[in-house]
Length: 465
Image (tube, rainbow, N blue to C red; front, top):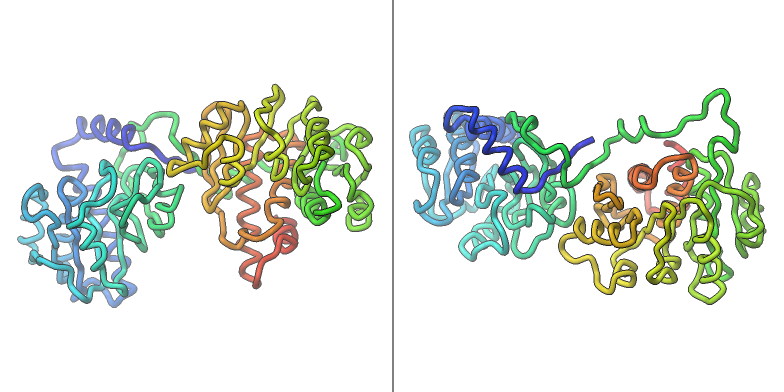
């Protein structure tokens, strides 16, 4: 598991660490890690010696990191120039002196050609839209240059992952001590490019509870339920699906496909598409109504259900069951202000979120998901390129495997079915949601490598997990 921390927590941790070190040690550690990444990047462009490196320098420590790293590159023969966004006022003087001593120089404008641009304009404490003088420098970054951002790309909101105005689009972001929310959520995560974390000794000083958690493949594999020698179809879990309708029969078939790819031992389907489900998936036990479906350990309801009075009655029947429930798609439109005591997962995209709350998530998607999870005492899966999963206890995860290939009809139905299978297998809701989103994202990527993606392709790739 990886973890991301908000700026205030990082600042406190840095202060505590610096109190144990000689002055300047922390910056030298950061600069050394940054210079190493720059050198490795330049190796792919012919090497450090003779390379044209441009440093975009703002005030404060972020610019100091870039200046010291530039000095190390200049010592190895790179032609390093520093563009000071605010002139010499506020620039890290010792860092600038080190650069000039190593043979670097100051330039007034960004060179038309550069092998590498290092973005040291703004640090993690910056807020709001970048000033005009910095925005001009961002616009002048050569299109063919590799860009490395220091800590976070300038112009992004570090705590929310929003981009309120002009921002650097980095190929690589070198961050120090820990990840920040902008590295993993929102449009900022895309602007970060590849994120490289440099260890500067900060970990022991960080709080026990991060702002955001990010699962890794090893975590999901370790959590995944595996049948043992004494397992049977019932002990592995039974998932029920109240999905699809005469108008949207495919939603039933796709959600069932997702459930069959999960760890549950038995899948039950209840609804008007039961005959088609039985024909397509003979292992599924079908019934025309929820009341006739039999016992399950978890329900999935809403995919393609429609929004008629009959659909509302189906949702109400499912919500009344004393088992965990996933409410997806049309079910969210029918949900209204309902809140249940049993464990529940809500899976809105932005427009469905707005129907539930009266407003779209806004620039801080983590805060929005956490707020809804608290209000409904449910796990909220706020879908997007970096899907946010928030639990009612305040715990937040961000899915790292999202893919644009999943932006096609029916993939959400597959995800809901898989999530329900995990829930029925005994996973608590937040972990089930994290695991389902992670594996679903991998399936989308795998399908995209073979050509245009449909929901059926994603369901097929899930079986490879």
